[in-house]
Amino acid sequence: MSGTFPLVFSVTSGKGGVGKTNLSVNLALCLAQLNKRVALIDADLGLANVDVLLGLTPQKNLFHLFHEGASLREILFPTPYGFSILPASSGVSEMLTLSTGQKLELLEAVGELEDELDYLIVDTGAGISDNVLYFNLAAQERLVVLTPEPTSLTDAYALIKVLKLTHGVEHFKVCVNMAPDLKTAKDMFIRLHQACDHFLSGVSLDLVGVIPRDTGVRKAVVQQLPFCVSEPQSPAAKAVLQLARSITAWEAPKNLDGNIKFFWKKLLFH
Image 1 (cartoon, rainbow, N blue to C red):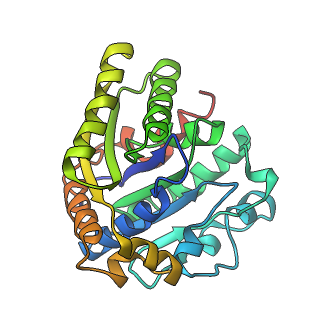
Image 2 (image 1 turned 180 degrees about the vertical axis):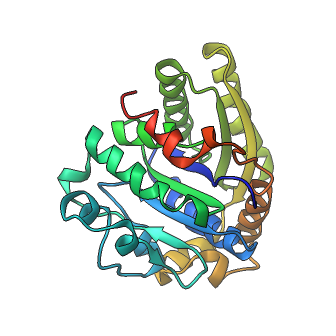
C-alpha cells in the first residue's frame, strides 16, 4: 500500500457476545500473514479483552495514556503474531466515556503511526454508547458483526440506524459470524438489508464475510490463542483468511484528506 495512508476500519456490533473481538484478533493476524503492517486498538475501553484473548500481559494501556502521561510508543505492544495492539483497561469507570480532550490526545498519538501502518483495526465495544459511536465515526470503513440470532439482528439494525440518522453514515460492511450454514447467514443479511432498505433510505450494506460455527474457536479461546494459529485448517480460520484477503482490496485514502489525524479530528465536536 505504498504511497497511501493506512486504512482505518472498525469491527463493531450492536450486541455483545457475537465474537467481534475474536474476529478482530484473527483478522489482524491474517492481514499480518499477508505481509501487511497492522495495529489493533482495543476500543472497548471499559471491558477490554484483546490482551486476554491473546494470553498477553501488557504493562501499560490506554488508561496510562490518558491519566499517567504515557506515550503511545510505551503502550503499543507487539504480539508474537506479526501485529501490534493498543490495549485498554477493563473495569475502569474513568474510561467509559472519553472527553473531547482525550479524543484529541488519542488521535494525535495514533496519527504518529500512520507512516508505519497499512491497516488500523478498531475493535469497538457493543451497542450505541458515545465511545462506540465515536470510534465508528472515526473509521473509514465499518464492519458490522452479527450472528444468526434475532437479538443480534435487531441490535445491529439499531447501531446502523443511529449512525445513519444521527451522523449520516450510509455505507456498512457486514459479517455474519457463527453461521450454521451459508443459507442461514444469507437469510440474516437479507433481513437486515430489507429493514434498512425499508426504514433507512440511502443505507447500503455489503455482505463481505461469513464465518461458520466452529468448535475449534471455543477451544482456542480457552487456550488464549488465535484460532487461526491453533486451528489454521478449520472452517472458521479459512473463512477469516478469505475475509482478510478481501479487505486488502478495500481502498485506503490516497490524499491528505484521508490521513488519520484529519479523519479523527473532524469528529471531535461531532
